[in-house]
Image (cartoon, rainbow, N blue to C red):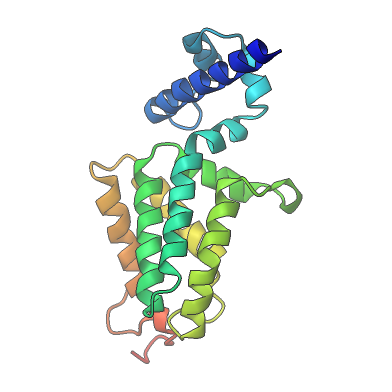
Length: 200
């Protein structure tokens, strides 16, 4: 029995390493069959460890998502709540744009029904981590009324998807986030301060 568990752990680690490389090359829709062949295991072994493609994506991105969540927690005590929120959003945007497949994984997470999400899905983890930052910014009047962390993460995901194939996706995605933050019409109010158009 211990030998079987050791084999299972080795297979899991090997599959995860192969999957990371495949997703970095081919994106979130990398062939599960090819991953199994490269790892030298059967497709049934892949499905035992990762019953769905989304489960595989979550495993591949888990460490990066946990790092972003830890960054959010580190920023929560900052006195400048607007700067703290923007720093975290910039970090998430850059990661989602440069780590191939992550934006797609977040998109698919957010497309699932409420009963289908779970605590380990990437979008749920980022939502939970970012919510205190958004709430504190809103309490300080640094976030427009009604804007939620879900809205912000949806915006980030869209930007990341749009810039994934740019020569410098991190810089371009953060630039576009800056445009969204500042507003498209200079002098027409700062939407992050809750100003109505024409009052800036």
